[in-house]
Image (cartoon, rainbow, N blue to C red; front, side):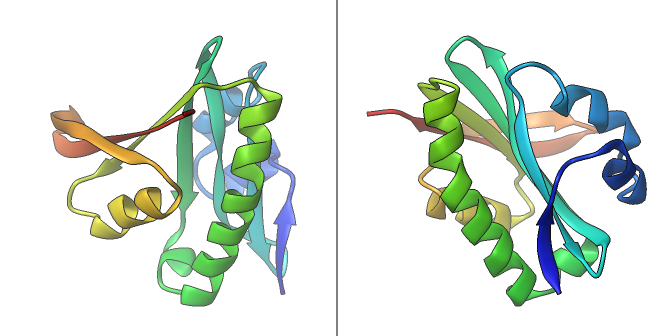
Length: 137
């Protein structure tokens, strides 16, 4: 059974991303995790970087990336909560980065309403990334 669960330190530990936990507990951060039978497979959220700007993030374990069923649930949860989080946090801009060699990441951001802004060469760990942004009209 796939379920939405709160983001906790234990979730990040189980996903091998314990170092990310302090960032998502900062004031102005929002997020969720998805678990199958209690085992986390995905997490996503927003971290406020300025008064009206946030950075979107996701962590997808291989089980999530390889399952259309899980990815549809992740997309539904994010597409439902994203506008609520933006309204609650009074956001004008949300930016997100994805590796250029992950075309699915680019397509997903576009489905969520983000627009391509440009490429970032050797942005993180020597990899090229694309920057996307959602800007309130």
